Amino acid sequence: MEKTIDIHNYDKQLVSTLERMKSSKISDENKAIIEKFGNNCFATGIGKPRVVKYVQTLKTLALMLSFIKPIVTRGGFLSICIVISLPST
Image (cartoon, rainbow, N blue to C red; front, top):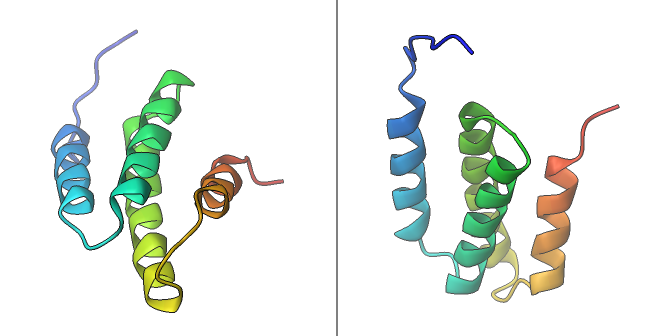
């Protein structure tokens, strides 16, 4: 495969997005779920730009949900992760 120039610097964006997520006020369990979800995306062949977007979106949702309800259940947050990863029809 031909190597292309990454003008958006997605490597740096991914690292900084993960650092911001880890230093945010969301629960440690949700941080672990988001990180595991991102790793799973890479394992299934999803590209860096999409993973960056998913991690940013999940971090935002986790912060919003923590203000509404202090404890987001593991099953509920995993359901959000699964819905986000489904292809749109």
